[in-house]
Image 1 (cartoon, rainbow over the protein chains, first blue to last red):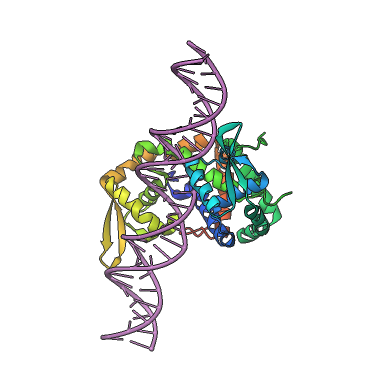
Image 2: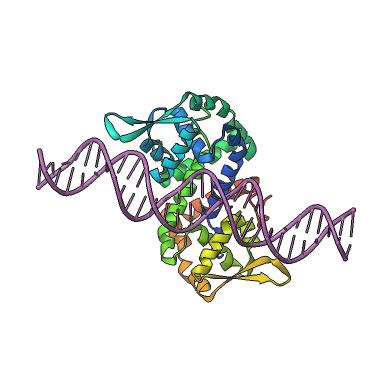
Length: 149
Length: 149
DNA sequence: TAAAATTAAATTGTACACAACTTAAATATA
DNA sequence: TATATTTAAGTTGTGTACAATTTAATTTTA
């Protein structure tokens, strides 16, 4: 077996599947006017509002080079606001606007739709999640969540 | 359980792991002067030289908007050449140069090193591969390989 | 076989991703 | 407490991704 064959590597299926998943999100996110990375930021904010940019970056493994323009886009769309932490003027605190909070309602149906698009039932979903969580822990991607054994 | 929580979705671990994997390739690919997508194109060419751009795109799920500049970079580095298929002048046929073929030797050690970096033994590697192949089939990403049941 | 449809690359424009660097604020330390 | 270090965002530059469009070659079909 040839180790340099595309079919004999883990990296490629991850790369291809990840791209395909975000491709399948696109039509679901289009009505919300969000790209997939923008949606991830909104997910973080819907979970916890009034959060420093830095923390969003830790949760999503993204740096300011990616987040600064992305947040500016969300501001332009009226979904979030920037404030500074008066205790520490370096910190940029991101807050949902009323509009940004309201979009959460429209997003409620997306997770179910995505599982449908991926053709996964509950059992399979859990099986995949377990394996991915395990690999994420191994890669030290548990950022924020400390459920690695 | 909140379905809009980042931790309760499959999409995010895929996104994060995929980014992390390509991040871990970077130092291994730096000596070859290749980015991760450029490396994927080289893998395809090392497997089958003298292949239309179109076929590379099908194998890697990439379109000409991504591949045209990427191939131009590989040409600039002297790794590949462009020719046209005289039978069909629309087709661009990509060929390895001697230099591009020689780099394959330097790349031989990369797959083993990556599994080491990911901390996977043979058994785990196979387990992950099986699950990923299964999901790839489900997503119709079997492009080129027809091993879906 | 001439016009229409299809196909393969290239081009254009938008949006990540990230390394490397800059700027400003806060903290540490000499 | 003045200087050095660290930290958080922002900036710059390169390289993907991909939708949408354009161009040129080939194939269909009227």
